[in-house]
Image (cartoon, rainbow, N blue to C red; front, side, top):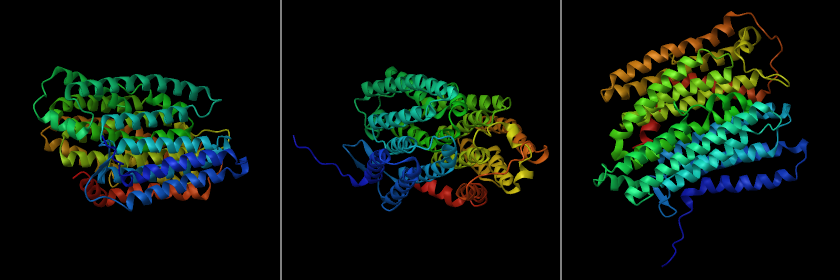
Length: 478
């Protein structure tokens, strides 16, 4: 029996991120507090080099390596490119916040890089085993990041809840995968689809396995009723960590569902479609209704995330190329919106003050008309108001649902979007029509101001010209 050396070229971006994470970990040990900026710069350089390696060698055909456990294809490369972009923004936005709280250490950047590596492995998974490895690498990184501020009781509590519930969800997912393996005899996602197509769909073990897998995936997305940890994690974690948790991992979770359900379990579409319908409706209902009662902006964004997950699930459950492309477009643009929303909280924070309550945004237009307008664009986009990108994202998903004759589901989504518009527009009312609550000048660094401005403008431009990104999503999913 001969051992064949696998092709390493398709996994070059992952190798770069892993190597640099280890190098930065060692270098950081020898840096003084004043020179800690080098860790930050090396982390950002890692993301740039990984992006060049990804975009510089996009394959025409999917490349499978490591004994069929890893695939490099157009969908994976597009999602990875946006993961790098979002992570670059997260580290840039977080720099001054962490420094003001004496949390600007190498651990944040190294753990963040290992989390990004986990996302990349999930995005390129071609086997249930790789899916689980990537998921656990990301999850363990997130647990550590949420508890990053060791002196914060809310952060420690949030991390404990996240860890316990995350372990439970991982167990459900692993148990479901073991049932699928028992019924089909393979972990390879392509072979799994082939064997299910071969006529073993009626096996009750498959149905139970599918239910466990969908439950595990729903937890990672934050869909109702597996959402319990999300508001506490968003609220309890340091805002710099909340930005990380609320952006790039959403793309990895989307890729996870696409790899497992849309590729590996595609022949069981009729079964998992009904499960996703229930998850989507519950997420839209609970997310939008409970968000109205929130006075903390991070908790409001958490329930907002749950409602947006409902929309992403709508595109996936349609089971058509247009539905998948619409869901991918929605996931990418939602992550960009979330980056801008949490970035605005970081903009208003200063040493000893967290600007995470709705009242902290009172009269922002008087303090800074430009950044009030940037927040307005982000909030309008989340609410789905044209001409921002959120409107087109919702429209593309609703069209996909209508095309598969599920008009009632589209009507439900629109009705709950109207409910959601209330709590979004409340933020706009506070910024523009209420008296200013805090007259302290905005003390943000020029790079944060520039990045946030570009973030807000991107939300507008992607809404005015959505065709290019949608075409990329359609091409990546062919």
